[in-house]
Length: 417
Image 1 (cartoon, one colour):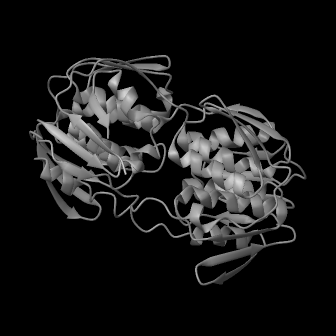
Image 2 (image 1 turned 135 degrees about the horizontal axis):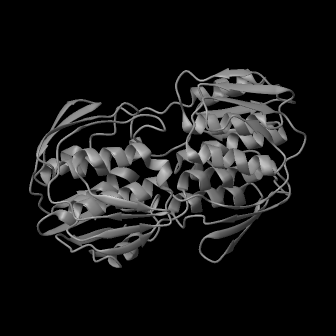
């Protein structure tokens, strides 16, 4: 087990580049199962979650070749099993994305319940109901699912609530379904648009991506393609908050600012100064920050994955702020660790906290509970007085490529032990 040792009060300045989008890369890796031809995927982030997805591909018989640090050549012409390894699936919730392409192409899939972050209840009923709507039969024994269908049939699928991964799963399941499938109340994140655009270039017929109604006309074959992942908007927002917390200027390169419109508005509301020029954002030194109310929402609202970093920022503003997390009921428990560092945060209920600031933070020994809370504790340690130790950083490695070395280049005193 590794840990980070961080000395606070670093003078952060310079430039940092944004990696490829984790949320697109994980889904594109699963989508390669839809074709028996060779895929070339570029700008794949070198993170732990990607490595697990690659292991799952190899475990079911795919040929995977890594080219350099961020490129993969994948061919799934010799898939030899439709059962997912429970040891790998238990490490990663995104492993659920293999269900749809295996079922769609081979008519069968066996899998255990997926693992992932401990950020509240995340049942898979919505995925199973979608497969049933397309004509699949589902059998469960103990904690194992067996799904099969000789031929999926297009149908109307109505999501009870907006779900990023459930929307993408339904899209891939419907690619080979007979007739038309209509998805109502779909998610519309940029990564979904990118996935659909990529699949359409490979022969799929998907219409309406980026809206809440998506239609898929079933096809007989998906070809392969050469695709580059879009920039990671969550990483861009996280580094923007880092710039706002620091005393120097920080430039964020190779991002897509239009994917973060509400986030920029919230930064403006608290008084952060920044300039957006094309694909780059320059975060200025902001001397006076104001309290605000923050509510997470499905895209294009404020991303739940940026809630924890933004909460760290709110510990440094003047006045009383309210954070309302509407997506997950267990995603505010990390605030107890911030309080141990000196923050003044009161939890009203599992969905709301009130932050009074500004608060002087102090370095402590702590543990990363999940990916996003983990990187938020790193941000808190950067502005804290003294030294911090963060354990269980394998969680952070799941979502941020080579994070300590990238932070070192902009002046952060951090090392991995």
